[in-house]
Image 1 (cartoon, rainbow, N blue to C red):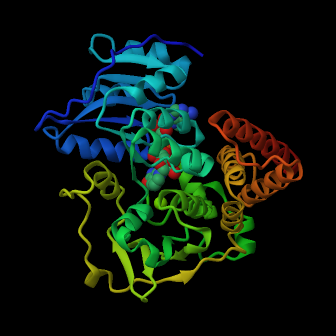
Image 2 (tube, helix red, strand yellow):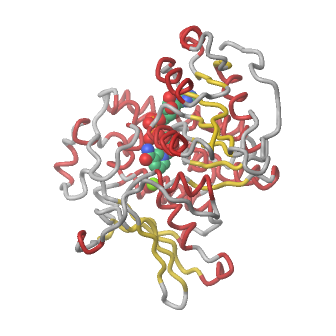
Image 3 (tube, protein in one colour):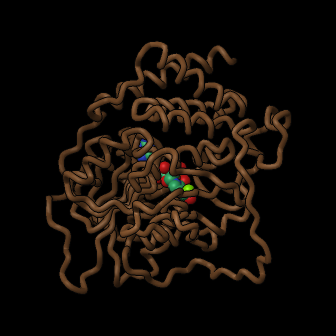
Length: 407
Ligand code: NAD
Ligand code: MG
């Protein structure tokens, strides 16, 4: 790891009336990162860019940092530091790398930090931004799956403002009557069902990587696209919603809705159901997280229900999609189990993406890892971030061992 000295001095967000909002994007080279930068570029008088980060792609990060006149560019992979520094030479943009660089990006003065790193790799930097009491636009759902209670405690303790950038949760946010929270019977997240929605269990056994990467409605990063195909994504989202909206597991449900137009439904005890509808476009939830509670015009295509004609719904099938059952069980079990579920899933999805295992091995690996850790009494709720990361490591080791056995 390189330890890079502070590239930019500390400062407070410039909240002068009329001054542009300063936005940092952690995970700027990803799918959510690109949608965010697209929105920021459309309103240069409204937004300026503070820090941008990437995992290892220095070239793309440098291009984006120049395009958006970022103050700081950080690459997580220390080996990419030299390339980033060379690419940004003479630009006036500060450069850093490694975990300390990510911390610096997260802590840089900003009005909002968009947390769009994929996986638990985003947990520490996002927690760092939380500790500054910033507005956090959270796409990185693995933070809440892995460290939900700890994360929410930190948000409260530091007076941070947490806004979701997950389309279903944004739908919940928009239909959730806080003054009637005791009257809420059920919160339903919709799921497209992914590319294998209509496939038989036997067909799913033979699912290829190429087919799994073809999501019917959304264009997203590889990990979440595979999570959508297994429906683990919806399981992770149930756990995300549990923490974001302080609900009980029995108040959360999933409904398959292939058109991805209705994003969430909140049912009240009087029998009324409020739903949020919009074209599937991440720029809408991202924009709302930036401006909440205000709304601004967005480039999201307008909904034409007459043209769509019909919206359909069906029950989720936890037999063909066991990842959803596993996530639900981990949610019911609590803290340690969800952290382990997330870590084992990250390892198994990475193996599938590298063509080192079959599609159906993903859920089998997660199930086996959870069983192994439960048998070893290792699923207690960790009390701090170090405990979470230690459990994450254990679950990764268990998952790796199972994948080796599965061949
Ligand atoms: P992506 O793979 O397209 O982008 C991930 C970003 O994280 C990239 O900038 C990458 O360089 C960076 N990154 C990867 N590994 C890293 C590491 N070890 N350290 C630091 N940075 C690293 O992913 P995405 O589809 O944009 O998703 C990002 C997050 O948002 C995920 O948690 C996902 O579940 C969530 N999300 C995405 C969408 C979507 O439409 N893509 C919707 C809802 C939620
Ligand atoms: Mg979602």
